[in-house]
Image 1 (tube, rainbow, N blue to C red):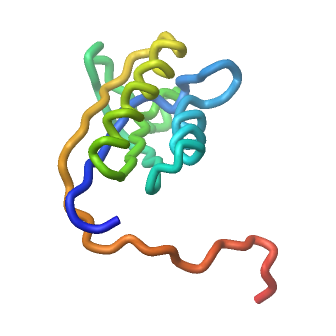
Image 2 (image 1 turned 180 degrees about the vertical axis):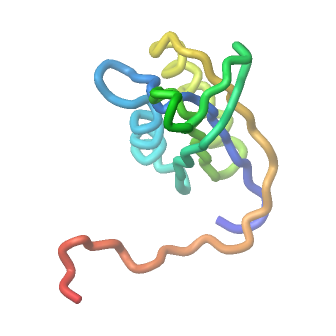
Length: 121
């Protein structure tokens, strides 16, 4: 994958679940199962959204409602198709979310060494 592509961003809360699983894990697993180029989950430290409630990781705010952003890059057709699936997962969770798609240009996309946690040093 090189050149024009699309970036799907999904903004949710780390506490959002589908059944017993975190929604961000379900979205990333689904992206992998559908053969998308790659996905990254980023955890935020402060946010507010449509409800205008502040979510923070300050010690006095005992909450697991920190923001999570899932970023997925692939071709525009694959991203648009996957966005429909993300919408279904969000509906299934009955939680709020923000989903955006933006054009990006891929400069490099190549695999690195496969991570093996059992590899000896």
